[in-house]
Image (cartoon, rainbow, N blue to C red):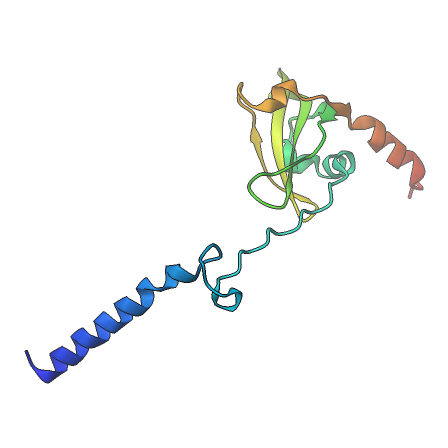
Length: 150
């Protein structure tokens, strides 16, 4: 083995030794506090959204164009276990593109930074089936009455 190869092997062995020690100073190790890796604090939760206003203002974020959502209802927002945002259920009576009634359809919406960023139609095993819903229309009508007509 040449001198260059010995240096490379020594360098790799040293690097491996240094990297193997990285896990020794985690937050649960018996080391002085200044040598321990600090446990990360979870990000703070966002404030719960005004779901009625959010859905009423962005029906197109939940329902497809032309579905003519009627009797729109929402559940209470719940903390999204995947992050700091919120999730909720939205129900409405929908109509197909050709005008055929589709009946009541339920969607789970995902809210982050005060905006609906995703939605999906619920399956039979989703807890949206057992949620309690409040109508959105009443808050939309109240809002329309408060704002002056142009």
